[in-house]
Image 1: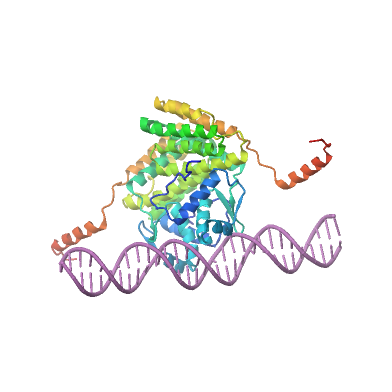
Image 2: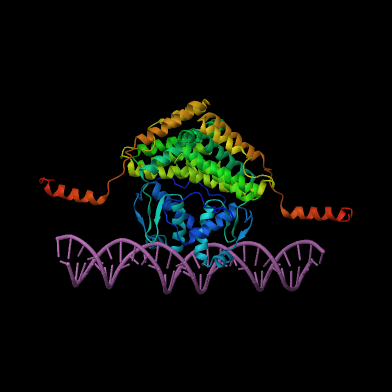
Length: 245
Length: 245
DNA sequence: AGTCATATAATTGTATCCAAGTAAAGCGCT
DNA sequence: AGCGCTTTACTTGGATACAATTATATGACT
């Protein structure tokens, strides 16, 4: 019963074509962590699954590749992107630069009606969290950040942040513990309070702290490869004393 | 004798394919204002010109469309983008947010060797301007801004700014007078001096002023459509008294 | 003359086909 | 058993052919 997870950027006035639906489905599946990082995406399989030819699939994959949600190795095909530790750090650093710097503009553009929209997103986020839908909560948490920046009315900035937020979903999937639910419990509400009072500087500091907390809640260490891990795991397992289950 | 104008973003580790060369040529032609905004880009013509099939061309066009350098109307084809006045304002606003906010990071990352790289860009910009190559000067001026942000080492940010800078070329082509040569005469050197002295705050203020000056040097008014203009032009021309050439 | 409808030309959208490249399996050898 | 080579299967890369859509030009009608 998840709300429709649509890509944030409308990408101009390009009206939705046939393959746009395929894009949105894949996009949603990735950011909702149904397709985990590393999952291979063969063109044939997708074409068959969506009932179209490989041509249409390739267009969609290209778009996702440009948005860095999938990685395409030449002659090897596409798979859901696995951001490296450095990439992850850069994504967070970029988010800090943009979201903090835009905070004065956001505060200036705040109106009660617009606050309501954000408040509703927070409510839905809490509901998803309460229902145990962690992945949906992460997406909603990201949408909060995007909708927040949307108050600036600056489409290029919003599109770019939407991209960074999408990549953040991948990063959480890779480096987060099962407990990491996007942003902290009721932190977003704190920001709304600051905005309602028009405290731009405090809001900016809050955002920096908020993003730092999320980043520091991750285990940003390069995951070990499967090969040596398996070897060690087996020898370790062979030498382990037997224990009844 | 223009230096190779390559797209700033390396777009990951995706090694250059065959169509990447086509992309770079089209990219350069657009930002150098050889292909002016509004120019139609039929797939057949391009395919024939580059000696490849339409398949490869479409991939390139899709990428350019994603970067907002061309506009693709469904069933109508692609043409060089014509940013609206609002788009232009948003591009500049986005640049102000990013480039100003990143200035502390840039100042911190400044080293003499890196300043030399920037200084050389300024030199080449002046040389192009002196040689009357206005379009090249605009591109070099843009590269200065991108290389500046590259000091942060933040790839997502740099890629995004590169996109904004490219769009700035289009905006200048549409709303600039023949005199607008990207950035002011020897302004960039002023910034380098500030960076050398490590004055982060002054550098940030300088950048804001710099970008505002560029924007205000443009005639950001919606261009009149050709239709009524042509009618008026012809009647005006018909009633004009004859004059010997 | 102006306008609407039709027909034609041009361009894009999509599917299918063949070639090329890469990874994996199979085989023989040391 | 381990290592290297060859072959096979699979996947993508690119081109071509056909269908769909749009814009233009032509013509008849008001």
